[in-house]
Picture 1: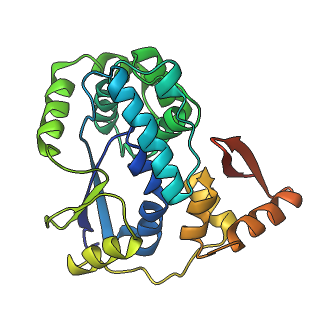
Picture 2 (picture 1 turned 90 degrees about the vertical axis):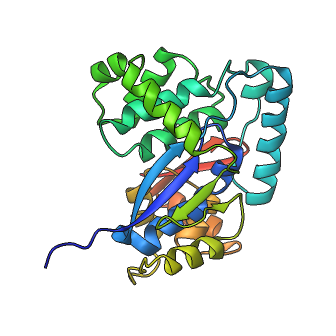
Length: 259
């Protein structure tokens, strides 16, 4: 029997959006619970064409609010010390990567670079560095694509598609988007209503989750591995003491990798 295509899951986001970073635990749990039953398409909405002092301050405050709400680590100093000139170059880079493959891992690398490592992701060299760190991308092709008319048109179409949407937003099966940061149950109910089916494999172990996602913050491990309360940090540090996982200090918290 031929494979049944997954229900389309439209993800409206921006690499600079602090609330999209806060929603990474829910997004990764969605990926684990529904597997190939959902087929993801990313739309970068382009938060700010120009970032000046008011926009930079608003992004820094949003990053702190999102971290307080979600527990995800964050370092807002990139918006205060040396803010990027625009969020749009990162969106153009995502559009260029989308011509080669699923841009999800690249978007994740951008989020970490911006919101944990304090790096300005608004120039071609910086974005190419992020692509190199992501791995598996044709960098020479990206250099050419960054300034191409086709990529500009694709990004312009994404901007129009995301106009007026509060990020993060998820739309399943062409339905109305579930907008803004909120509990996982909203996403799950919308996915089920659109016809997506849970894969039924149960929550993965911590090491299996880290092998799949490469890097995870503690709240992501808690969500994906169903380890609420103190169980996630306790398990992570137990594995770290056995040299099976390794932490990296980031944004007032830890980013974990398999050892």
